[in-house]
Image (cartoon, rainbow, N blue to C red; front, side):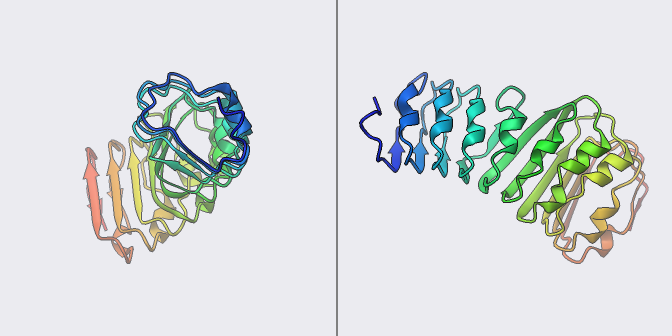
Length: 244
C-alpha cells in the first residue's frame, strides 16, 4: 500500500477502522508525523514501525483498542512527541524499548508500570516534559535500581507521581527516587515508609504536594518552609499528628 510513497513526510490515517497497520509502512523512511487517531479497532502495529527512524510525532488520539506497541519502537530515537498521554502497562511496551526513546519530550503524561527491578530503563529519558507517573505493581524495589532511574536528572518535568500500590519500600528506596529540583507538583501514593524523604524540603518550585495512603507516616516536618507551596492534599494518613 505504501511502497510508492517513500518521500512522504506526513501521513494522516484518521478513522480508517483498521485492525492492523500494513507491514510496508516501514518503507516511509522520511516520515516525520504519523497520525492514527480515531481508529478504535486498531489493535497492534507491525514491527516495521521501527524502520521510521525520522519519525518525530506519533499521534494516537482515541485509539482505545491498541493493546501493545512493538518492541521495535525503541529504534525510534528521534521520536519526540507521543499524543495524548500514554499508559505503559505491563506487556504494552517493553521497558527496554522505552529506555531507548532518549529524545522523547512532551505529551500530556507518561504513565509507566514497573514489576520487579527494571527502573533503570528510565535513566536516559531526560528530555521528557510534562507529567511522569511511576506505578510500582509488585516485587521488591532495590535501592540500586531506584538510583539508576535518575529521576532527579529529568529537569524538565513539571509533575511527578510515585504510586507504590502498597508495595513494601524502605526509606532508602524513597530517598533514592529523588525528584528533580524544579518540580511543581508531587504526588506520593501508597507509600508505607515512616517519614517523608529529605529531598522534599529542597523543592523550591513545588506548588502542590499530595500524600495519600501512607499509614505509617506520623509527621510532615519542614513542608511549611517550601517557598512556593500553595496546596497540600492529605488523604488516609491515619496516624498523622504533626505538620510544620
